[in-house]
Amino acid sequence: MTGLRIGHGYDVHRFDNSRPLILGGVRIENSPGLLGHSDADVLAHAIMDALLGAAGLRDIGYYFPDNDESYSGADSMKLAARVSEMLREKNFRIVNIDATVIAQAPKLSPYIEDMRRALSSAFAVDESQINVKATTEEGLGFTGERLGIAAHAVALIESI
Image (cartoon, rainbow, N blue to C red):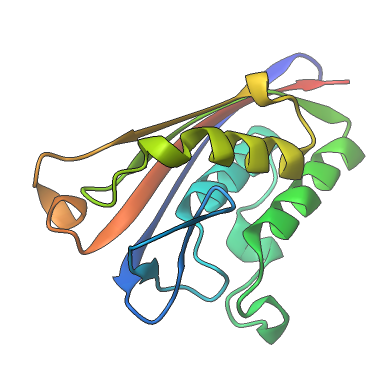
């Protein structure tokens, strides 16, 4: 099959005061971290699922299961690099990624450009191919109540 393909990814993690907050491969200061088997980087996880979905592959839980101790505390940027390799092995290239982090707190705008840099490096694409946005839910829902963070991502890939 040739042409363009699109995928959507979503991830959510609850806050965990005992861990650092990592989003898009960037450590966010003065905030509780997120609970998860790996580093719980919801942004990277949503993007990986979007890319895998676009390629018609399974989700990140299939490739990096939470019952496999080798992924305990794993750096999501290394997992992202592996997903990028998997796409190349299937003869796909990333066209662009657009992602949104949903968090009442912390304020993420100071970190967006660093996230784009870290993600572009991990996925081996130009920064211009990655867009990251952040929004709140105006105090509504679990993110609005500051119980956790969610992320959505869409990815466009093409056959090579």
